[in-house]
Length: 306
Image (cartoon, rainbow, N blue to C red; front, side, top):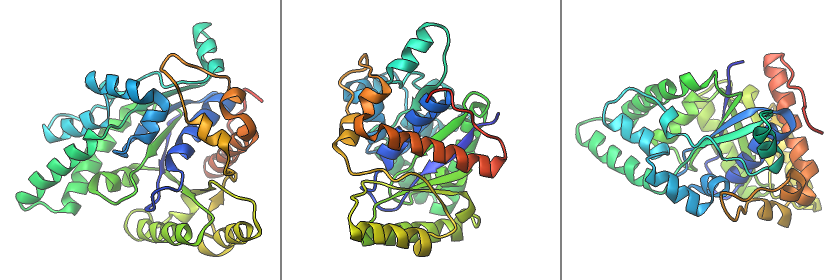
């Protein structure tokens, strides 16, 4: 099976991109036994910090791993190759770790992490590129070619590749969008988020993928079950982002915040211990995404854990 590449993206920040990425990675690895690669291209590095901890993130950066190294490879004119920059163990779930120790791996999470130095490297590249009469469009095209070349050897090694995109449309962000097969769009149930999500969808449809609607998976995050929020959610689904596939609603919960805290790289928790009261919501998120993929490919993903 060739890995599906999904870009988790929205122009608006603060809509739950990083938490959606982590929850989807954990849910697909745990419930469906899939090997998931997370590629973090957001220089805020929130997803990387959640999976690796702040200390771990600095350690792997010192080991010359991360997306900034892939960008440096492009700057040096080297052949695209992402494998050396991947951290193969970003697992925080006890069940997955124990299965691995028993030589019975059944679901795993790896990461090509980000780091704040990624944005500095991207800014330096943009300045050099534009000073020699290059344009944002030509840089986007060149980065897309490099990024696709780097990802192509990974397609047979993973079942799903999740790209956490930054909340802007820099050439690197546009290259990630151009590489994706599908798009996961997290959004809040509030008027500002609706507007941002619609603007993002319209731009990607016009400039990247004309068939965006058929390849979009929308996740309403931090949902507060009020009459107003329910009405806005209905408007998202029936008016503003109609014809998209809608995933599970993720409630606004302290359990989500706790799940994003990993004290150290050698700390693990059971799935239920990590996600607490939102365990069933993460299960529904993974199940809905599996249904979305089956609708697109005709191939079902079988659950390995209940």
